[in-house]
Image 1: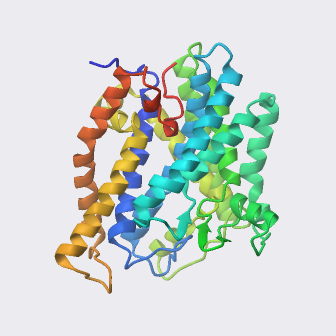
Image 2: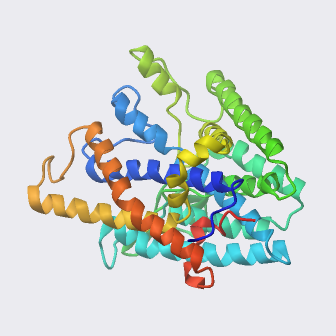
Length: 390
């Protein structure tokens, strides 16, 4: 049997497993519900409440995952003789690997085009470049890094009005950093789906949070900090959201109370606004605290199995979803225009639950294989960013 992770750190894998399952639901939506496309932010006046709720839950995925990547990078460093040098080198190598992975296996899973005419620079790309950026930033004194991370997360919305056109070096750089747009590279088009700048701030905050999980830190103290940090982030979200001035597009009164509340929680992900990050990271920190409650941790052990092998789960679910879609289209034909699509959000939930059950055994088996064979370098998948054990 593989060694079980430290009880005080199992919460990290469980939270990672949680957001992987929410991601699965969102990707089922993007595969089998494309007849009801949602914008960013969503149209609170027209989108169904059930679909809105599914998309809102999925908002947790990227911010929590990037935060945990920074945290895991700090934990990795604590096992090294020269923590900063080793962590910086690790982040650079793994970040570059992730960028390559996004441009190859991940994009092919979405498009099944070889060679592709379009490349989507999405979450794996953003995590990879954020890791590379953190590999340089971690050399800053901690107070300076904290100020820089907070400034980026809190202040990047000031730049929302800065727009650029064309494909020169500066416009391309700005599209990568903060403007969701298209980059034309001859016959190849690139979509900067995940503008990078705010994610650099988030991964840096995760790294700075690392000492909360150090061996010398009392669990009770860490749990208090997680609780108050989560509450503080949500309180600041509420203040900014109801002030309706800064940090996202204003919410508006709608035709019903429910839709008005939908507008309040209709926040912008691309790039992630300050209010988006306060809400999602606040919830993520509270979940991390909640998962340290022993009875819940024992009950949710399967989540840790998924969170221990996230890259395996990520790639596996993309290819399984694509295969299922092509099979359904071949067997039953298009049901909505030229698409094969499900008719209800309930159908999406059923498919997502069924896939979670099917994908769990191979993911658990791979996670345990990784735990047994840490000597194999190719198993050190970078998205997990060094694991969660001290």
